[in-house]
Image (cartoon, rainbow, N blue to C red; front, side):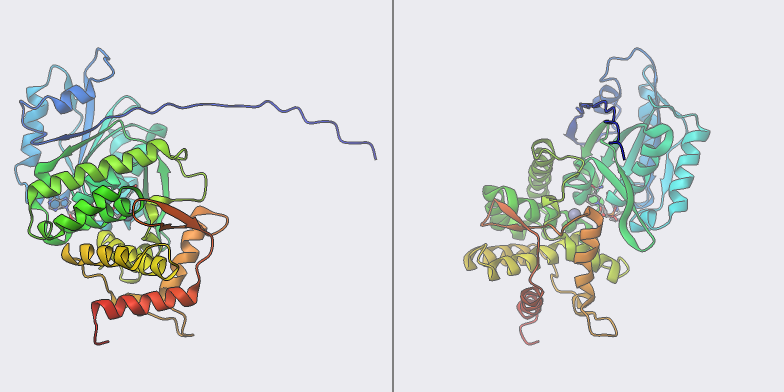
Length: 395
Ligand SMILES: NC(=O)c1ccc[n+]([C@@H]2O[C@H](COP(=O)([O-])OP(=O)(O)OC[C@H]3O[C@@H](n4cnc5c(N)ncnc54)[C@H](O)[C@@H]3O)[C@@H](O)[C@H]2O)c1
Ligand SMILES: [Zn+2]
């Protein structure tokens, strides 16, 4: 047999540059606040900027004048801005990610209103609404300009500042989505005032997560100020949100893998069990609550492997407890009929999501991290039991 001819291969290499602002402000829709207008104009294009606004229903309930305020803002800046339609309500919370027909509905609205690739989709809401509308905005015409206005602590310090979106599908958390960096992120601290106590705290878990693996001084600040968070100290929360958002941005900017082609996902420290807890509880446990528990669980495991000291583990546990987190959930104990701990399936889900070998991030001391490809399940079993005992000493 003659040798196959050498293939003709053209090597294609493309570099795509992304550059978007993440701004922090107050009263974004006050007509005298130029931030939104200037953001839509930031490319210097001489034309009217067309936008559609999607609004989390619970934000709309909490701020009954918001739709009117948005209409008034666009009217005040009518020389430069144009609203394609009055603000559209989106069911708030995880419900918006659990029903793909909602995403279809958003896409239909965007197409029916002739939104093009230079139009803006303003998404005002929690992380869930940003994910579901963000996915629709990323799919229509292969991507419209997306302006995120996150309204929760977790949205402002984590979900809103990233470069991806996803919805739940076929029972899988975040099973389908895209990488789609936003055109801009506009964080208005005033939105946080109307959060219920659970959602006020959820983003604090992500702050502990990122501080433990990236920033020791921030971790110490979190521990020193932990009691201020459940007391709803606004100043402390603003600092937490801004610093945590900066750390997330810095990580995505510098880690060399913004679209997660590799297996390591350090920002998912504490998340393998968290995602499973959310699913096992049918989302009764929110993302942030599950992350707080997952961070402590993986810290207990890290201590059992001597990756962090006993004092460091105590500081993490105390910080999370003083922040007001519940930390133990009965779902951690749930078992299949053959006695397998259901939460362990979270490791398999995690591996499937990323592909290839398992890769889980753990702290290595405070402020740095390392990745492991294997979890010692017997040790993790002990870590779960220790977590239960810490929270319920009598059990
Ligand atoms: N795409 C990403 O990179 C990324 C990253 C982290 C988390 N997430 C996702 O984000 C979601 C969690 O986000 P979340 O913690 O913001 O929860 P959420 O979006 O479910 O919001 C929590 C609740 O607060 C309501 N709400 C939002 N803003 C409010 C306000 N200002 N006042 C009163 N109520 C308000 C919401 O309607 C909802 O009921 C999860 O689905 C998670 O998977 C995505
Ligand atoms: Zn998270």
